[in-house]
Image 1 (cartoon, rainbow, N blue to C red):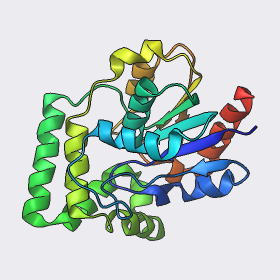
Image 2: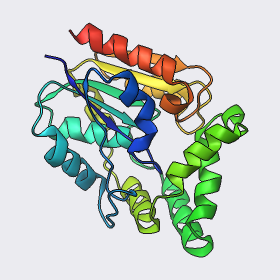
Image 3: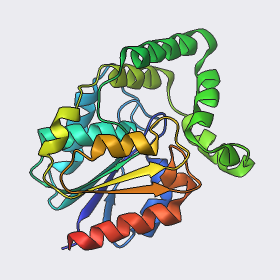
Image 4: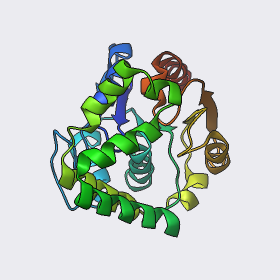
Length: 242
């Protein structure tokens, strides 16, 4: 039986960021939830663990043979899901993410972002923040940039603020990494400044059974920026699981 591929999006996006993966893996069962706080799930005032519980209750609990994939915020949620509800997860894919909780500096930056949103409005924050997620070349590609902004700019203000607070208050998962027993695939964007490849490799080398790949011509959003290479690597990982 083919596995179920569950794809958890990053901040400040929604499930549409996985459109290339949904098309490529059309022969599999692919689940792409819209996480709390997004355009299609306009919730507010939740923790990251509550986001994980939502994914488990609504999507994971009724499936077996799951390959769980998360990017950035989705990667934090994936790690918590594996720690809290490991029974049906067969493989783990983490893209452009970390494992530790926010540092003091990162917490202050998230507080500054919330203040910026309240003072200047959501679009001002989104337009500046989004360009940090992609390569300079893609930021200058009008078609690519407008497609990305069409996703990020439709997210609700209260949802974005709530996601920032959830990220700020998330539990540190780094001590759990050595206890991950399932095969794990780690993917980094070569030009990512938010989760640099060297730092990602150092963090996730604590997982006993891990593979690490760096994606060229990509920053934080490798599945959107270089979908052909990302899809190929994920496909090979799934095939090796049998």
